[in-house]
Image 1 (tube, one colour):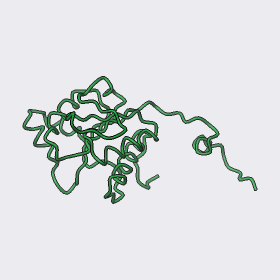
Image 2 (cartoon, one colour):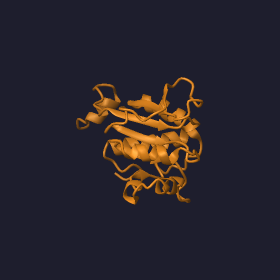
Image 3 (cartoon, helix red, strand yellow):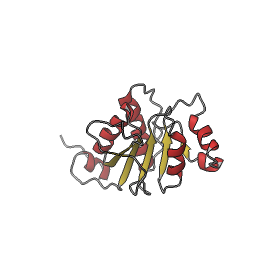
Image 4 (cartoon, helix red, strand yellow):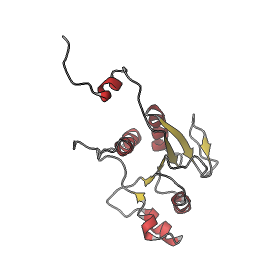
Length: 171
């Protein structure tokens, strides 16, 4: 039986009948962590150019190349996710990222508490309007708890944003 329906480019892509037209995006996971590992792995599968930014040369993730400094890869296509809100380097790393042309910057953490990045950036003299550019919480609210779930929720939010959609089940 053949289904009759209007031509839908998204349907053709889903059935591998048309190429995926996707804007180039870079995903920068900051700090080597279990969540960063899943973000990078899933992100590559979803078409992101992936980069691990880890300021501490002693911390690495197997299978991923890490850089220690913000470079030209943090451009207007970059979505940057800080994957650990307990690191001492949060303030300086975010301060420098806020000076970059990064398209989107977020830090993981519970919405029930004020993020430690706020005080760290304030102490470094970053103005409140710049601090407000840092998204927190991030990702879709799916009740994620494990590193793969957190990475999935984060990437789902970035994909919704990339596609100009609100995320969730509101159509």
